[in-house]
Image (cartoon, rainbow, N blue to C red):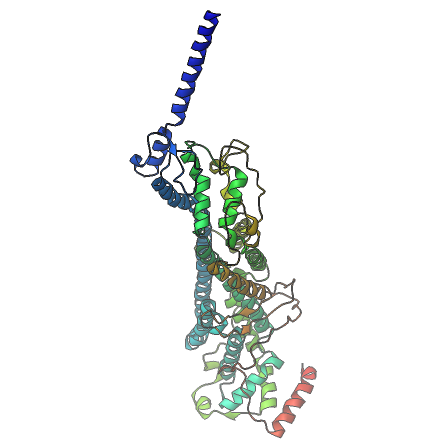
Length: 557
């Protein structure tokens, strides 16, 4: 019996000793000292062994390797650590679309510049001095296209600009083909009034008007949409720094340090609730964000089809050349009808004594110019391929804000299963994962969110997205909308719209001509441009003559 008592005492002593050694090891903070110093903090802040945590404000107040000073420093670090993955994801998104915008904008501008150069080379070769003497008309044409791309309809109304271009071209050509006559300004106004009825340039002005307005409006809106993405992301991607969010981040990321479990990661659902609480305002952007991206995708389809900017720029020179030849070939018939409607002009004494029509510098017939194809852009990629790449990126960006917590709470940032940190201990996380958005945070168990105080910086981006979506949808129909906050715009609309969904491809020489699209009204109080239709008082005789001309025209053809 005495021997058994001795054995029992020895065994009990060994157990007590082993327990004391284990407890001593558990109270050691060596791992915490190493991890803490790796964050750039002073290792001397960490106690050599665990202390009672009743001084802590966030972490459990039992055994602890943290002092109050450590907890405050780790709280600041936790907020930085929480922001880091969000910053990385948003920075990648900004970089992606900043590059895409730069490439598209450069591509569109270079296409326009190359089209102008090709036009100049072709017309100098084909028309010689006649082009040189009238180069200002065509230079202004391209200048106005460029100005519209830069500033929109607040600077240039494409409808008026294209109408003015063809009327000015008609007036100059009419003087050239009728060099023996003298024309007053009022007479040329009468000539312009016959343009739409007699169509001296054929159907080319109408087709060019449709193609250029649609493609320019679409290209400009798409480019601005690409530029908006990094701008929005830059304004709304900052993780909330409210005391409750910082507290939740500290509790999730560094309270395991205080318990001596530096390698312990948070449970996935715990991480989701913390991130959804800290990113609640961003999630409310998702609806308008997705609507905006859908509008971008729709416009990209248009730019790959009937609104192809690249295809519309290539044939400009050939189209205008064909229009000029059409006018020249039918100049006699056109002049006769104009003389009948506007009266026969006076002969020009100067021209009659100086030279004949043959010597006027206007060739009798032009040879057709064979285009070398679309202008090269300096890129080894077509617009179609660029748009295909952009569509892939846009699709990938959908639901970016609502899925941001799920994107962050993955991989090495969390622990799968029950061997994870649940906010108080190494155990299973029992709370339900709450939904996205500010309203759902009223029941968030880990982050206190005041749902009555939304982030106004983020909230202000919702109408910005709505406005751009409206503009993209208008561009989808071939209509430009300029808002007050864009280039001091007036809010007016311009362009040649088309019914959704179809917008038939209508390049300048395609046949048959498509159905005339719907034209969206411009502001009723907009002043007409100086080169537009100029109304002059009509005499009764002239009105009767014009009426007779309209009635007889079908028989004369």
